[in-house]
Length: 152
Image 1: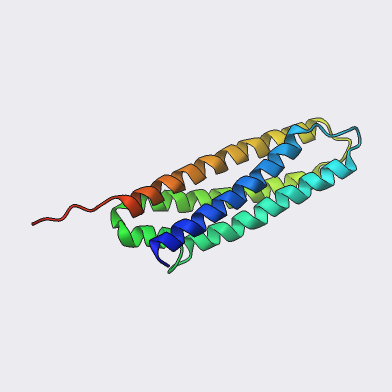
Image 2: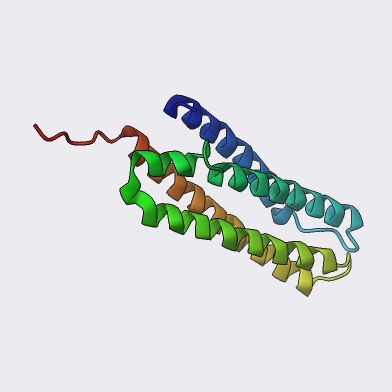
Protein backbone atom coordinates (compact mmCIF):
# COMPACT_ATOMS: atom_id res chain seq x y z
CA UNK A 1 0.00 0.00 0.00
CA UNK A 2 1.42 3.37 -0.96
CA UNK A 3 1.58 6.17 1.60
CA UNK A 4 -1.18 7.97 -0.34
CA UNK A 5 -3.42 4.87 -0.29
CA UNK A 6 -2.72 4.39 3.38
CA UNK A 7 -3.47 8.03 4.17
CA UNK A 8 -6.76 7.79 2.26
CA UNK A 9 -7.72 4.58 4.10
CA UNK A 10 -6.91 6.07 7.51
CA UNK A 11 -8.84 9.25 6.69
CA UNK A 12 -11.90 7.22 5.60
CA UNK A 13 -11.68 4.99 8.67
CA UNK A 14 -11.36 7.97 10.98
CA UNK A 15 -14.44 9.52 9.37
CA UNK A 16 -16.40 6.30 9.98
CA UNK A 17 -15.26 6.18 13.60
CA UNK A 18 -16.20 9.84 14.04
CA UNK A 19 -19.71 9.14 12.74
CA UNK A 20 -20.08 6.14 15.08
CA UNK A 21 -18.80 8.13 18.06
CA UNK A 22 -21.22 10.96 17.27
CA UNK A 23 -24.14 8.53 17.06
CA UNK A 24 -23.25 7.05 20.44
CA UNK A 25 -22.67 10.48 22.02
CA UNK A 26 -26.08 11.55 20.71
CA UNK A 27 -27.72 8.57 22.41
CA UNK A 28 -25.84 9.27 25.66
CA UNK A 29 -26.87 12.94 25.58
CA UNK A 30 -30.56 12.07 25.34
CA UNK A 31 -31.82 11.07 28.73
CA UNK A 32 -33.86 7.89 28.40
CA UNK A 33 -37.54 8.02 29.23
CA UNK A 34 -38.69 6.15 32.29
CA UNK A 35 -38.53 2.45 31.51
CA UNK A 36 -36.80 3.29 28.22
CA UNK A 37 -36.50 -0.18 26.73
CA UNK A 38 -36.34 1.15 23.16
CA UNK A 39 -33.73 3.76 24.14
CA UNK A 40 -31.63 1.11 25.88
CA UNK A 41 -31.87 -1.24 22.91
CA UNK A 42 -30.63 1.47 20.54
CA UNK A 43 -27.89 2.47 22.99
CA UNK A 44 -26.63 -1.13 23.07
CA UNK A 45 -26.78 -1.39 19.28
CA UNK A 46 -24.82 1.82 18.76
CA UNK A 47 -22.16 0.75 21.22
CA UNK A 48 -21.87 -2.68 19.62
CA UNK A 49 -21.61 -1.17 16.16
CA UNK A 50 -18.76 1.07 17.33
CA UNK A 51 -17.11 -1.80 19.20
CA UNK A 52 -17.21 -4.16 16.20
CA UNK A 53 -15.85 -1.48 13.91
CA UNK A 54 -13.02 -0.58 16.30
CA UNK A 55 -11.94 -4.19 16.81
CA UNK A 56 -11.71 -4.66 13.04
CA UNK A 57 -10.11 -1.24 12.56
CA UNK A 58 -7.39 -1.85 15.17
CA UNK A 59 -6.61 -5.29 13.75
CA UNK A 60 -6.12 -3.76 10.31
CA UNK A 61 -3.89 -1.02 11.73
CA UNK A 62 -1.68 -3.61 13.42
CA UNK A 63 -1.63 -6.08 10.53
CA UNK A 64 1.81 -6.73 9.11
CA UNK A 65 2.49 -6.18 6.32
CA UNK A 66 0.05 -3.59 5.15
CA UNK A 67 -1.18 -2.05 8.37
CA UNK A 68 -0.24 1.54 8.89
CA UNK A 69 1.74 0.80 12.06
CA UNK A 70 3.98 -1.60 10.12
CA UNK A 71 4.44 1.08 7.46
CA UNK A 72 5.34 3.67 10.08
CA UNK A 73 8.00 1.35 11.50
CA UNK A 74 9.33 0.57 8.05
CA UNK A 75 9.75 4.27 7.27
CA UNK A 76 10.74 5.42 10.75
CA UNK A 77 12.16 2.62 12.95
CA UNK A 78 12.95 5.21 15.62
CA UNK A 79 9.21 5.58 16.23
CA UNK A 80 9.07 2.04 17.67
CA UNK A 81 8.35 3.25 21.26
CA UNK A 82 5.41 5.36 20.06
CA UNK A 83 4.08 2.52 17.89
CA UNK A 84 4.38 0.11 20.83
CA UNK A 85 2.42 2.57 22.99
CA UNK A 86 -0.34 2.81 20.37
CA UNK A 87 -0.51 -1.00 20.14
CA UNK A 88 -0.73 -1.22 23.92
CA UNK A 89 -3.53 1.38 23.83
CA UNK A 90 -5.34 -0.86 21.34
CA UNK A 91 -5.16 -3.75 23.79
CA UNK A 92 -6.39 -1.58 26.65
CA UNK A 93 -9.25 -0.23 24.55
CA UNK A 94 -10.29 -3.76 23.55
CA UNK A 95 -10.37 -4.72 27.23
CA UNK A 96 -12.30 -1.56 28.15
CA UNK A 97 -14.83 -2.26 25.40
CA UNK A 98 -15.28 -5.80 26.74
CA UNK A 99 -15.93 -4.44 30.24
CA UNK A 100 -18.32 -1.81 28.90
CA UNK A 101 -20.13 -4.41 26.82
CA UNK A 102 -20.71 -6.55 29.92
CA UNK A 103 -21.82 -3.52 31.92
CA UNK A 104 -24.25 -2.37 29.22
CA UNK A 105 -25.78 -5.83 29.10
CA UNK A 106 -26.49 -5.63 32.85
CA UNK A 107 -28.41 -2.35 32.62
CA UNK A 108 -32.18 -2.70 32.96
CA UNK A 109 -34.64 -0.09 31.65
CA UNK A 110 -35.51 1.09 35.18
CA UNK A 111 -31.85 1.40 36.35
CA UNK A 112 -31.15 5.09 36.80
CA UNK A 113 -27.90 5.09 38.81
CA UNK A 114 -26.39 2.13 37.00
CA UNK A 115 -27.26 3.67 33.65
CA UNK A 116 -25.73 7.03 34.62
CA UNK A 117 -22.56 5.24 35.71
CA UNK A 118 -22.46 3.30 32.44
CA UNK A 119 -22.98 6.42 30.35
CA UNK A 120 -20.22 8.21 32.27
CA UNK A 121 -17.84 5.35 31.56
CA UNK A 122 -18.83 5.37 27.90
CA UNK A 123 -18.08 9.11 27.72
CA UNK A 124 -14.67 8.54 29.32
CA UNK A 125 -13.94 5.77 26.82
CA UNK A 126 -14.94 7.99 23.89
CA UNK A 127 -12.54 10.64 25.18
CA UNK A 128 -9.72 8.08 25.32
CA UNK A 129 -10.61 6.97 21.82
CA UNK A 130 -10.52 10.50 20.44
CA UNK A 131 -7.12 11.11 22.06
CA UNK A 132 -5.84 7.87 20.60
CA UNK A 133 -6.95 8.85 17.10
CA UNK A 134 -5.21 12.21 17.48
CA UNK A 135 -1.99 10.42 18.47
CA UNK A 136 -2.30 8.09 15.47
CA UNK A 137 -2.83 11.04 13.16
CA UNK A 138 0.24 12.79 14.55
CA UNK A 139 2.48 9.75 14.19
CA UNK A 140 1.30 9.14 10.63
CA UNK A 141 1.72 12.77 9.68
CA UNK A 142 5.22 12.74 11.06
CA UNK A 143 6.18 9.39 9.53
CA UNK A 144 4.86 10.12 6.06
CA UNK A 145 5.63 13.81 5.64
CA UNK A 146 8.97 14.46 7.35
CA UNK A 147 11.99 14.48 5.10
CA UNK A 148 14.95 12.52 6.30
CA UNK A 149 18.24 14.38 6.30
CA UNK A 150 20.85 12.95 3.92
CA UNK A 151 24.53 13.04 4.69
CA UNK A 152 26.70 14.23 1.77
